[in-house]
Image 1: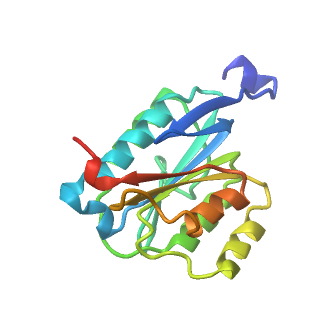
Image 2: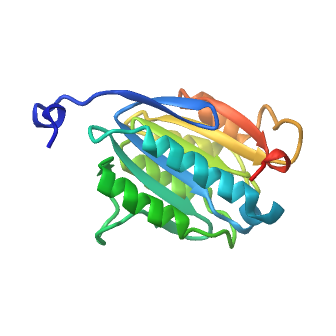
Length: 194
């Protein structure tokens, strides 16, 4: 156990996903793995997984993390089985995370709300939410619900994948980030290079 953990002092760190930065000690990555993320020869999902692992590598053993991939169902990292929980970013847990991420493929639909509920229930400081928004939240009431769930006031950053030159500057992902102190970025998936 590191000195910081033993003394109950955690060290904030800044990490990023597609240029969106977050600072804290507890990070949750919530990434869409629906069928639409597997279009364009799988480039969107591959790019997302690469960014996730890069961000994770910037964390040290004093920080904690969890990964949730979702489509119609949720898949969280549980290297030793049991109920998903925050994990310290030890080298062993990062190796488990890399294996978990490499085994993720795109298929199915999109259930944003259940994924966001699971993520905020972990009590993170920072949440990175990445989706192609193929099935957006439908109304302000759903955003109000997320606000209610986010009782620990996690910063929620939104990364949107799409094919336009820029995203809709007032869609649910922009509002989600704005309402939760986060940042929003749009990435054109047709420009991804392997």
